[in-house]
Image 1 (tube, one colour):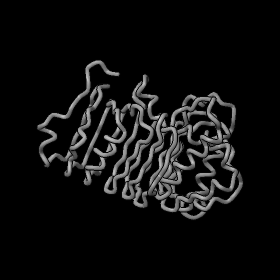
Image 2 (cartoon, rainbow, N blue to C red):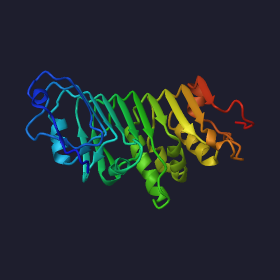
Image 3 (cartoon, rainbow, N blue to C red):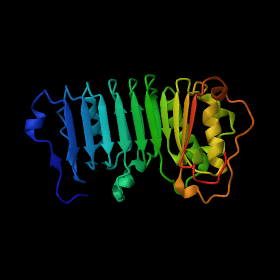
Length: 280
């Protein structure tokens, strides 16, 4: 716990009913959330490196901001949270990123369930580390851009559980027009991409897919799976990890029809591979 003591919102911030933007970087301190105060006109809330001690107070506080459109949680410690419940009808942008450089702030999201019920969400960003479990109460049908950027999970975790977790995440962003996925998503999806249940999700609205990947066969297998699920894809961007260049595996695209490649795909970008000897 931080030794500087909790930070309480000043009365001059709590009292007025006109506040629309609130940004706090508490450098690891505890935010003392008032139990009887909400911001009826608040549209944007950003919390950076902030300790949050009570899940009910935080949920009630956020829920008491009916006009909130932008919620950003960066490097926050959700102390003893069992559920991080973000249920906001008018929310348009949700940014959750706990990759803030080590310590307890890199671990606490592991210990709670992340529940999202934001039907009007347009932009979604989730970065490492992920929560213990995840649920979409309402899948956002107006989603424009989704970014899912996982880190490397420990070997002790069951591979199939990781794949199921990621499939659940992907089902929730199935209406996205732009999808950006980190390298380890492809790696952890690979064990189940051959199973029929993987194709129960179709990204009909997806026009642009940006992937960060490696050279190994697990990446190309997951890539093909995603292409099969995006029949209207127009732009595919593949960023190759520089650290993978010493791999001796050669990418091979299966000789099979993929709907987007025959009907709609207009542009393919392969980035950071032009100076290597690898072939696609």
